[in-house]
Structures are given as structure tokens and as C-alpha cells.
Amino acid sequence: MHIAAPRRRATAVAAGLSCLVLPLVASGPKAVASPSVAAGTMAAAPYEYLGWGNPQKPTDVMAATGVKWFTLAFVLSDGGCNPKWDGSRALTGGSDQSAINAIRGAGGDVVISVGGWSGNKLGEKCSSASALAGAYQKVINAYHLKALDIDIENTEFSNATVRKRVVDALKIVKTNNPGIVTYVTMGTTPGGPDANGKDLIKKGAAAGLANDGWVIMPFDFGGHSGSMGSATVSALEGLKAAVKSAYGYGDDTAYRHIGVSSMNGKTDEAGETVTTGDFQTILGYAKQHHIARYSFWSVNRDRQCGSGGSGDSCSGVSQAPYSFTKIVVQYTG
Image 1 (spheres, helix red, strand yellow):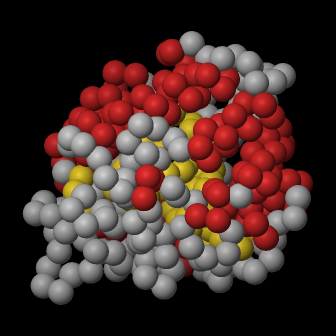
Image 2 (spheres, rainbow, N blue to C red):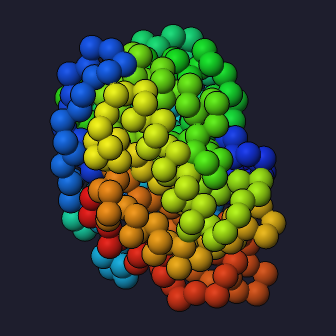
């Protein structure tokens, strides 16, 4: 996503560049995980970005839809190896913390997402895995997190050294925070992760990273056939095959370690639209295979555009308020 012109991935990228699971004891690329365990509604935590798009009050969304968990985006580098909201707002003491306090006060909780398409990335600004793990730990400590999402895109994703640094940092985080859930979210092609995505998963397996969910963003494809729902299923099957191969999982375990983060309505790419019907297709797949995560970008956009409405704050399609959130919230793991 862009900070100046905020969308999840505001430039279409050809070929898709871009659940709670019990901790497993990993000793290499063929480690076997324990079966996943549903964690309330953590598996359905749509993104909300409080820095743009006239964001709705999270507690209003909770009351209207029944959603309990949100993925709040994005934590970035402040120019060095230090995390801040959008790279500029302090982790604690401000409006972001107030929103989290309100969500928790209403019986919900949050996953915090680190990364996104633009801005300074901690994976690049932190010079070592231990330093990067320390930056992630600051975020975890600030909010006593149960779950952390690393949204690895753009230059973080395309750099093999940084991909390994992120994986190694997450392994440190998993060791130091027993029971924490980690997601790694990346772009995809309609057939599954591209070469960078497959390499990232292989690096995770080789490092013995017990990652709970390898998550793809099935949009901005640069071309696809069929509906966006069917293209998403195809991408998820490719992801499952990559995770199964890298970790040596059986089919059921592999499915339980993959996830999806779609985009509602018109995406960043002309002519590409994800409908509520597509979301229902994804929901059916998620329920069938008990995937780790079903999310989307974003709550901010889950409403019809008014006159002069921006794509940052509405879906671009005809819909009732929160039509997409109400589908996602049906997923419980």
C-alpha cells in the first residue's frame, strides 16, 4: 500500500509480485506441526487502516457485523530500526492505542500488521535478524499481542537477504513468545506464489520457522481467467502445494498453514473486481480445508461509494454496508 495515495497495493503488479496453530518443535525443513486449533475468531480478522480512508470506528464495525478481531495496519520503520505506526506515530499513547483499547473493551482483539507496499520497511532498515526481532518485539510488548502479521511486499519481498532476515527474526520471536501466532502475507500469481514467494516459504522451512499461516493476497494479478473467486482458489492450491513441499506436511496440515487476504470490490487493477459471490467461494474453500486465516483489505472500503468517493474509503461496487465483512466473519477456523 502507499502512504501518500493509500491503497493496499496501489500500483498493479504484473504476475502478482508483490487458526491458531500449536507451536511445533522444528529441527529443519521437514518439521511436522501439531494440528491447528481455532482461536475464537482470530482466523477472521479483516484489515483496517486507521491512517486513511475516513476509517470507521472499530467498535461500530463490531456492533454492525459481529466481527471481534481486526488486523490493524501498518507498522513501519521510523527511518531506522524502530517501529512506528506509518513510520511516524508512536506505538503507545496515541489514537492507535486508544482504538485498540476500545476494541478490547468491547470484547475483541487485534493482530498488528508490519509492512505493506510502501514506506520504510523494518526488514530493510534493521541490519540483522536479531535487530529485526527486537523491533518486532517492541510491537508485541506495546500491546501484549497474541498475533503478528508480517505483510512483506515490494523491496522487502524482492530481496533474498531481507527475506531470510524476516524469517530468522520471526523464528526468534516465536522462541521468545511461546504461543504467539505469526502470519506472513505476500502477493501471488493465479497459480500460487511466484519464485520469491516460494523461496520465502523454503527459507522458513529450512530455518525451522513454525509459522502459523503463509498468506497470499490474490489480486492485482496482471491477468487471470475465470472469476476472482476461482482464481483465488487456484492461487491457494498453489500455495498449499508450496507449503506442503517445503515443510513435508501432509495435505491436511498444509491447508491449516495457509491463508488468504483478498481485496473487496474493485482492486488496484483496471477491470479486476472481487464480488461478494467471490468472497462466498473463498469462504466455502476456507471452511472445507480449515485454513489458518481469511482476511481482506479492507474494512475502510467495505461500503458503497458516494458522490466523489475515493477507492481508499469505498469498494467501488454496489453493496450494503459491511457486506464483505459479514461474509468473512462467518469463518471461525
